[in-house]
Length: 128
Image (cartoon, rainbow, N blue to C red; front, side, top):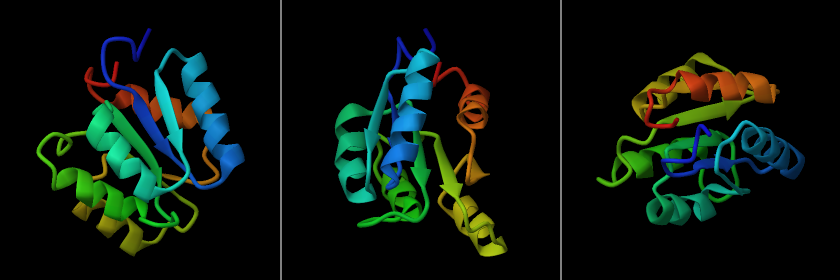
């Protein structure tokens, strides 16, 4: 199973249907997945559960995906956790900010679950 020997994949998405669609799809692919609807709730989960990867919408209530990624980078235990951003508002500024907070990828929404899975599979063995 891809996620059996490492921490869970943390999925942060404020649209509940999208969130549970990603969670179900990734679980079916063999990953241990935690789903949460806002960035403020995601940060303490990440600090306590040490995820193998974080998938986050960029526009979130409470704490943006950029702010979440920056907070993860600022904490020694989570500074190297791969973060994949999701956004419907792809701009040059989005790309620059994603690089600044060291997101490993940004996918355009709507993002098919298969595309998200493919991006997770590209992350080094740490996620598998």
